[in-house]
Length: 114
Image 1 (cartoon, rainbow, N blue to C red):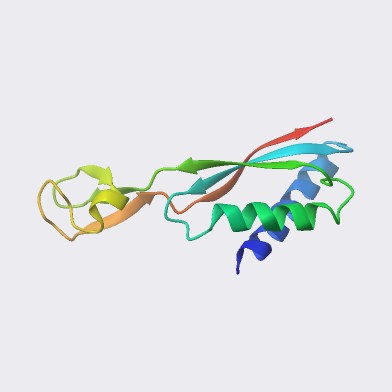
Image 2: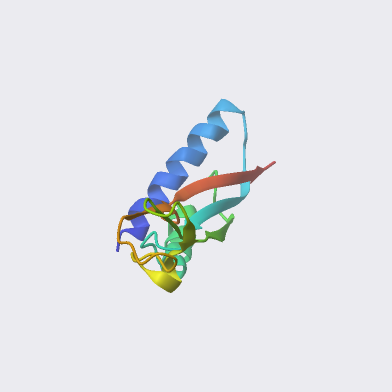
């Protein structure tokens, strides 16, 4: 389960931002999670609750997850298409010369604090 490692990394990032901005308490963290990131949102939320409870700064805070759609780009026809629906083969031209444009991200989007 790599979700716990991701949560520790997120908390570390939040702690750095909090120190730079003199924040005393975080009430919520908004996370952008790519549709094909390989991260299981329910596991991430469970790990967040456990790890956040052990840190004064984020104890009791909420983790909000926003899913970013996976989009693939085709080098042959130049089109973009939804990855999950079509996989690696371009639905427009049938090419396999494709690459993931978005959808694998794990980003801290917002930190709510007081």
